[in-house]
Image (cartoon, rainbow, N blue to C red; front, side, top):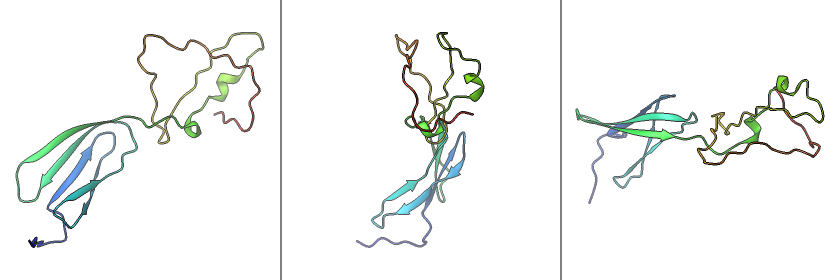
Amino acid sequence: LQVYRPSEQPPFTVKYDGPTTGCARIQDSRDSTYVAVYSMTVSGIYSMQISVQDCMDQNVLSLHLFPAVLYPGTSFIRKSDLSNLMAGNMHMIPIQVLDFYSNIILAPNTDSALSEVGCNMQPRGKIDVF
């Protein structure tokens, strides 16, 4: 069986729209199958629109992109939150936890919550504060 390819361009497009927008790169597997390749780094809800050349119908799908896993390199404590701390007193220090792409990682919905962290050791190495 020989497949006729009148054009090197794929017969369809895949576009995404949400916190960021773009067009997927289409890879032709040369066996009548295709792969849409895209990279989204901002979490949120996207719509994926698949359009076929010379066809009026479009397929629109919804995609919910969640943040990636915690990445310490983009998480931080603000320097202003570390001022006026005194030994022996209890302090609340907000920590912003982000993934590799700087998406905020939300606390999970659970019945129990972590209310405090005891820190009795000296930090080692560089601690970034902003």
